[in-house]
Length: 307
Image (cartoon, rainbow, N blue to C red; front, side):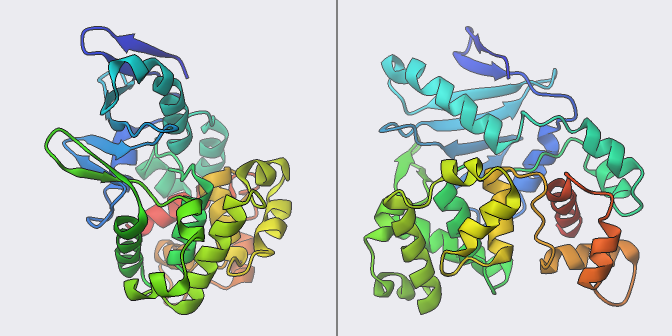
């Protein structure tokens, strides 16, 4: 994505692709008042995005012409040139700016289930989780509990073991704990957060695999397809098909990732169909037969129906 400096404000201005709506993304990111890794206020999103040893606090907003305005605080001016490139790449991946959504919208316009969500949420991008450990950790935390408690668990984990940067007003901007930090813990360090023993074990064991280089984002991307990435991920204790496909959607960006057994997906389809029961897997396979190559986006838009 082309980017340039706004010399008057020392901000970055980042071009956005066709079919992009920052308002839709901002609305999605505002879905929980208990989110601890970023803040949405006044039409902008603020997050601490670590770059090597730096902890820049980044505020992202939208210009009238659709470009993103990116303000970077908390970094010495001499270090700004070194952090700008990695920050732009992170934001482009976070907001999925490199994907051409025209084929998705063409398909959705002909699909009875997706037509209305695609029109209603036009410009929404599949907001990602670029860091592999954060993506897997968030998925593990959310297993078999409701979303509200999952956010509470995440906040407890982040504020207990994550780092933070403070802005000019002294407010803390938290960073998800590193795999190295969690790999060094014991289960009894995590269970006081109201995390089950099994969940604590899964998180620590996965962190250890990432910390020692056995499980990497590059390896999963080099797998080349979602089936092979799923095979690698599900070999890890605590990662089943749902978690594997969630990570493939949000972190690895495999467009055919499809957590078909997801309860939220079933509820969204039920709501759109106006039926008194959730669809069966066989029914979902039939309904999704035209989504090939866009299952991840179809799922994301259907999840949005529930928010």
